[in-house]
Length: 193
Image 1 (cartoon, rainbow, N blue to C red):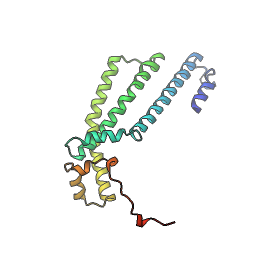
Image 2: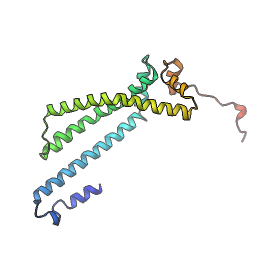
Image 3: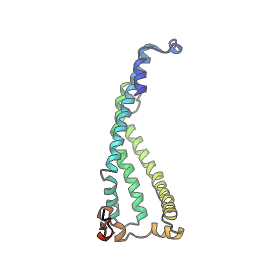
Image 4: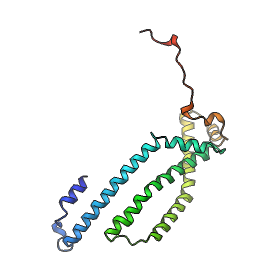
């Protein structure tokens, strides 16, 4: 907000050190472009916050976990699929904003030299590259974090951690936390206050 106020306040006056080289119209165009980009970024932040709420409080992660847990795959690969799914879905949600920034904002100010075909080609190339590099990276992160968690927090040996990470899922491991039984307290343990 502070940057937007500053740009708006100085939109009609080129700084003294640049007056000889930058005309007022170019300065105004740069200010308008900056304000448009800031508005687009504000919208991106709002969408990212909504996505975070959907993933966490809305149960999105839980639903994706249940979906991948239904496969008869080792839990390691279920976790990798979960990471790839979250990144893919988030990217698809952000896609319209990217198109708007490129063809709406940058196109309006004459900065976009891309065509829709080129944009799509770049998007597909980036997606393919992200998959080729991202899946092995996600697998490596899952191995490192999983082993750290199991050896440091759960006090398992390296061998136990490795065996559990790559074992076939059992029905008890697939039980969702919302289906866990509630432990009733013993009335004899209650404080008679």
